[in-house]
Amino acid sequence: MRSLLLALLFAVTFPGLSVADEKPSGPFWTGTLDVGVCELRFRVETVPNADGSKSQRLVSLDEGGQVFKLDGFLLDETQLQFEVKITKGAYVGTLSENGRVSTGKWKQAGKEFDLVLRRTDTVPVDKPAEAWSGQISTLFQKLTLRVRVYRNDDGSEKVYLDSVTQKSGGIKAQRMIDGDKWTVSVASLAAKFEGTINADKTEIKGKFTQGGQSMDLTLTPEKSVVEETVKAPSRPQTPKAPFPYLIEEVTFSNDVDKVQLAGTLTIPKQDKPCPAAILISGSGPQDRDETLLDHKPFWVLADHLTRQGIAVLRFDDRGTGSSTGDFSTATSEDFSRDVEAALAHLLKDARISKSSIGLIGHSEGGLIAPIVAARHQDVAFAVLLAGPGVNGREILLSQGQLILKAAGVTDEAVLKTQKATQLAMFDALQEATATTTHEELVAAAMARLAKSLPPEALEKPEMKATISAGIKQINSPWFRFFLTHEPGPILEKVLCPVLALNGEKDVQVDPDLNLPAIRKSLENGRNKKLETIKLPNLNHLFQTCTTGSVGEYQSIEETLSPEMLKKVSDWIREKTSAGK
Image (cartoon, rainbow, N blue to C red; front, side, top):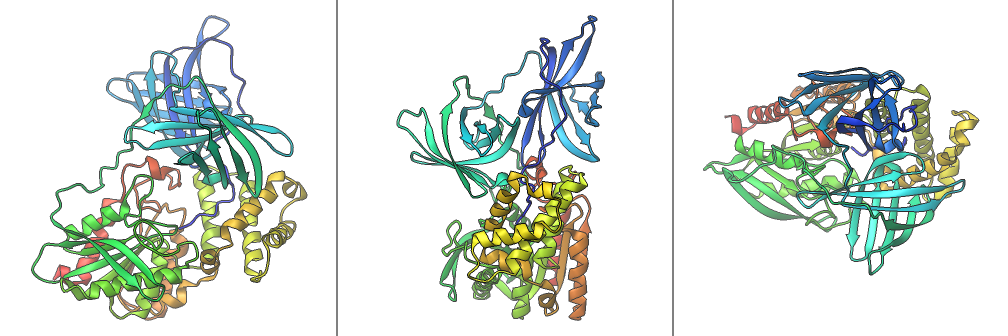
């Protein structure tokens, strides 16, 4: 489900001390704290005190090198722990057998974050493969920005943006290179740098844009850069050959919209027709595997189901991968016709049981599946994975608050501002006409904000830029449809068996808001073949998690919970010929 989180940057910021002059000594402990939109590099070190004793401090490299005195520091054969009383933060970790790795949790403001610290005997040096920096001129000041690039051992890279002047770094970014053209995108800031590198690779001239503002930026390489590889993330559930089933590349057409869809069909090796499931992806342009952060959840799900005797068709979204069409102009209603084309394709396959073809939709796919099931008696079952039960407006308002809270935000003023900002934009968009301009939408949203926020909040220079960037994001056909679409009346028309699952810690589609609404709508339609389940300790991607925060998705090695996989396959087998 697309996230409209208008608190554009969250980082764990501390009222820190200035960097001390004392020369630190070992051992040193280093690690990276992932708080969602950014990753903060920490170093724990020992320094001498004036009386000859020693104490420990934490250095936050991505907050301008701020240091914090550690209290209650304990290091023995089994554990490492300490407190930062000034921030009410604490760390407790368990040591590996060789005593050089501490795996634990950083706790602060009622939240927990995974933090692994590794021991070194000398001062560690950060070694990005590339580092580029330059200045932008804003209305009030000049800001130095840095782009850091690290090479992964599989050839991919990790990219970060640092706002050096503001002592805020580690902001996750993506880089695209096309010939001499560079694009560095920072989704969490709704920002982008586009530039051209010169022939001798000494500078990149271009524009940095954010919130409708465009500023000149020339990046030049920092000289003290030494390449360092980063271990590729482990994804142990990604299927590996050999496979005990058939794998076929398929194409099929949505003749209404003139779209050609491309996908993969995995089918059991058996003599009799088998049941089948069509996988429907979540929002945003997705490939057939629903690839995200090196995870391939649809490939994992397809592999599991096919091993259980259930054929699976998964396909690239229109305009994505090998499928044709324009994704940017499509709505969930348009995507439903692509699913209908997939259904028609399977109905022609003699190896598939025509009475046992169902739909499995994740996130937005859980909105699309009922649209198709309500229109087609050929749909034998529907599995809704984190599917919506209420309209998009309610989902996004809930989502905005839950994401911030999962990231550790407890300040009620921040939460109130975030919600008020969303409401102002939604109201402005829903009351607009086809001829309303972007500037008029921004003005209308600002006028609404003036009724709910104090003047000092509106006077912040970033507020209008935030509204402008947000309006650009939501002023699309897809978003207009999603905001007002009511799943309830559609669900009332779904008569096939329905299984609705949500993770207990889903911060994008709140289980406590959506599961009861799904059940109520199905019951209103007299569907008695339904089951709604909230699975403990799972997030929006159905990974076993700690907080459910978006920032955890990448760090978790598990792609899909085995409990969820078993529940889905057992339920489908029970409802279809696979279990007979």
